[in-house]
Picture (tube, rainbow, N blue to C red):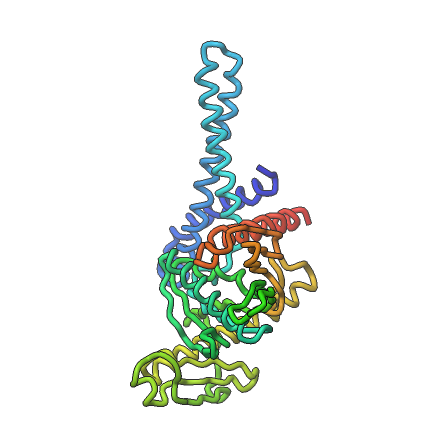
Length: 362
């Protein structure tokens, strides 16, 4: 294991000793807020420290076994121990590297996935529908729940714009790299001469704000409009002005919801989407400032970035940020996104680890 990682892990061991002492103090136990905060930190630090202790023990076992290799009577037993310890050390080192990486507090949160048709007219709208299907199928495979928030249907059955909420384990952490421009190359259903067309959609993945930590929006900064919903929902949804559109006047950011059966539920959902969009705007602005000091690890997250190409004639998906090419496009469009998600997460982890090493050397 690299020396800078050992130094980081030794700090965890020291911090665990400090936390054990602090949590034994009567004044800390009497302050429930402080006690809970330190208890959460203790659980996180203890997990790393115990893993590191196991790593140190197995490293010592490996050294002892290697020292016995020259003894003919003990050689066979020593070889087995060397193989066992080496294998476990590889697993432990990978675990510890992952545990040391900076954590995005939003990774565990639900997410709003917004898909908008771009260049390409009707074909772009149809592709937006294909992307929605891909994400909802992937969500089903992960055991996540999906909920349609709003939709603007095109004439041929695709979507000019659609927003879906996805809830489950680690949703935002898995889907956050989907934000950006998605380009499709294929022969449209409306093409009579068999020519390949190129069109595009934009995808934005927004972490649903934690109500306890969400930014506070001044009600006087909001304009709330109600209107009659369109689309699926039966007779009720078309007889009442249940759809809600909320505009944040200072930024011009708009969110709407029409899928619920009541104006109240639609307003609450639209406000969540609006808050997520405002927080994402703040996040992007902060990232832009940080990018002046260091290159973004996975791309700027700018929605205008072309991050991926879906080439149907070749059955190929290419993610341009990490030079990933997969020839299984049809299964990916059916929701088999796991290879793509894992590749992007692994790339981010490698870049974060490199950044940690640079920081340790600075």
